[in-house]
Length: 379
Image (cartoon, rainbow, N blue to C red; front, top):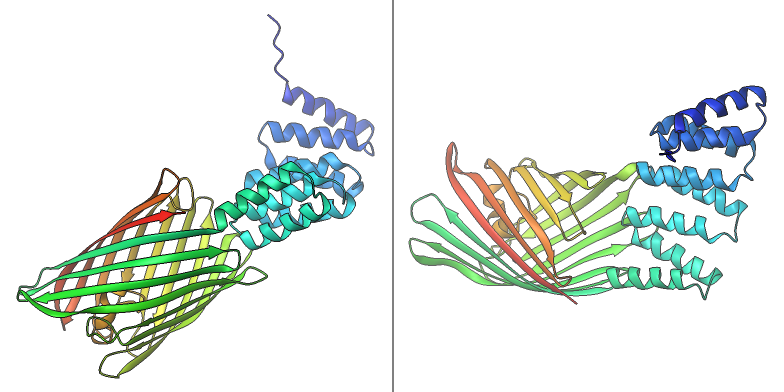
């Protein structure tokens, strides 16, 4: 029986001979790039694709093969640069414009994805594929969610705890960013008596800007002793090439007795394919705190498992925000594990379990266990 499977190695040998006999005949170089690609010698394939483009950019196939290689190897910055060059040479070719959009989509850069989808739609107004991509983007980004959150904290020290924290929130997300309204209720026990309870009202927002920048803002107010009177926060984020992200911001907490605390936050994160890691530090005169977060996204952006480790108390910890001033100078070692899952396209469920070894007086510790549950409905 005849074997019709291509012999890529034989093709490479023949193309190498052809290149030697006719070094200026670029088809041999393109054949070499393609066959090296097939045998998974990606560096050699990339070399020959670039060689053909440098010698004669009219080879449209070389651009397409190189862009597909960048997509496969997740070299997003290189791929966008190659796509831009191809679009300059072939402005009426829809394929290269769609490839550029694919790079932004894979990075969850919805601002640039929307920008270039609008641009390509203006050039190809009646193209059904482009209309479908726009519909899918807006269906993904333009969403509303309503949710509930509950956290139960047990404390190992006699007569302390348990603590309860429950909240309800509504999120509105659009291309410009997101806006969240939240109402929280806390009740804390000590020696079977209510030590503190009350409500907190909060507004949180992410605002997207141009050039891979966005801002985070948060403001929370309460008149009850279960929360600080004010908790304010701002962070500026910038996305660099190759999946890097950095943030710089400030936090402000004013307690019910009118004392206040300001801290600086510095963070650095990185995407590795489906993995995301982040290290964030909060710095104040009383000493720093650190939080290391890792996530693995296994399907959508709502489906992930997470591991978190930290030292010191963070001003972003809503469960312990009322005690932030007292805990700043005390040691704390914590670790968390959890997951989120999208169920039947509309429901988002999550659980996070945290063990916190908390110093409550010098060299004396209590163990705090948090069990947090999340349920949201996505419209």
